Length: 126
Image (cartoon, rainbow, N blue to C red; front, side, top):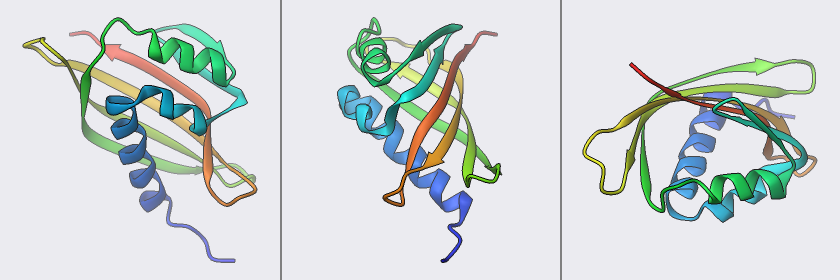
């Protein structure tokens, strides 16, 4: 069995996650499972439906993520992966961007892909 390159996997995941978030947030449902947990600005949310409900209820329709950094590490014997992202978030109609950080703990699926087990999002205020 070939070992996947964590940097390549994390880069592909980040591109997919944020392009989906920016164009079709409901489409993120496939990246989570019932045991998944999202902490969004300190609020803990568990399960696919609750997470998607939170993401789709955010008070803006359109946004664009601009990724600055992606760091990853292999995590534990189950072949998980930690992915830490920082960047800027541009909301439609807003002049200024918001800085954000997001951490994902990805776990492998039996089908050979990954799902988001943990997801922590924070806006970084100056």
